[in-house]
Amino acid sequence: MNLTAKVLTGMLLGIVVGLTINLTQANITGSFINEYIVNGLFYVTGKMFVNSLKMLVVPLVLFSLICGVCGIGDIKLLGRIGSKSFILYILTTAIAIATAILIAAGLEIGKGMNAATDATFAATKAPPIAEVLISIVPSNPIQAMANGEMLSIIFFAILVGVSILLVGKKAKGLVATIELLNEVMMKMVGVIMSVAPYAVFCLLAKAISELGMDLLAQLAGYVLVLIAALLIHLFVTLQAVLFIFSRLNPVIFLRKMRNAQIFAFSTSSSNATIPVTLRTVTEKLGVNNSVASFTVPFGATINMDGTAIMQGVATVFIANVYNVDLGLTGYLTVIVMSVLASIGTAGVPGVGLIMLSMVFAQVGLPVEGIGLILGVDRLLDMIRTAVNITGDAAVSTIVAKSEGKLNIDIFNDPNAGNLDTNPIHIDDESNQEIAQTVRKTHDS
Ligand code: ASP
Image (tube, rainbow, N blue to C red; front, side, top):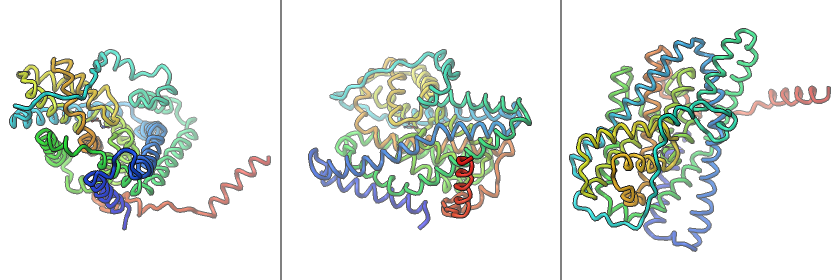
């Protein structure tokens, strides 16, 4: 079995085991399964895996983006890649939320439902645009890296890259070193991916075993409409956008995205999935690192199509439950607010709900309403994260194609970038050489 097949098997087995535990209610507090399996083995293995992905994000983004900027070598081109991807990200997010509102409003979801809920949700105020803009420039880059503030890291990395270009020939050695560091980090992604099938199994078995099935059934209208809107965006809108702007085959694109989607689905975090998305986009889809190193982390932060769809469906749902008529202006405000909120927030689990509270506060919907959908959000978060990263990859591919930075042979090659064609192999002879060099330097 190749790695993709193994990851897929891990995912399916995880879902089956999770469902079995869930439906047989073997997961009651204090039971062996709850203590040692779900919150023991599954939890620890899954968390360790997500941590190991997160561990790679900052160094990978930093090194690959510095290499990317040096690789472009032309500041004007950098500006074009930045503006094209920004416009496409905003455009796809706006289409996503508009479609969601239309579908949900057309089906009148939530009409006649009871608004009673015990769950509460505290409102979060949207950060003022001025603050979001200011935070792009880090006053302390180390702190920004420690906190994983993606926009600040991107800003710093671009500035380092540009300055290296300005230093010119003298910086050749430094560029070679950063390129090597980037290669080492990419190898590390491969090493971590080799345990992915087991980790994906554990992550999914735990998440599915804890889903509240009763609540899912109660909110079936909301859940099904949201899933349908997400799937329409994934399979129709994004693929149409990809085809219209780049004339590339959407079927090939979707097939190559499967692995990264499973990672996003299992981790519920676009940020944690950055290493896998970056590798998929460069090695499987053929996007040059000079484009991908910018568009992928940028997209993980500002582009959240799936999350925007959730904002749209949830707004209509809760407005209907509370009998509030938002009107056209209300819905337009929702669209603008959701797009803005997605720019200022990171792709981490559950952030969609926080964004939703910002939107509700703006249009005057009761924030307690979020309590209604809180219980089913775990599963929906998984699905929308997979949609989010697919949007990042689609835009990266379009921008690369438009700038002549897409290797079409790699895009069309079904085996390109498969980990199995590039296995982790240990070269004893060269390792001995490295060890000897280190020893010699040490002795002298
Ligand atoms: N978990 C999502 C992401 O990381 C964000 C969300 O919708 O909550 O992209």
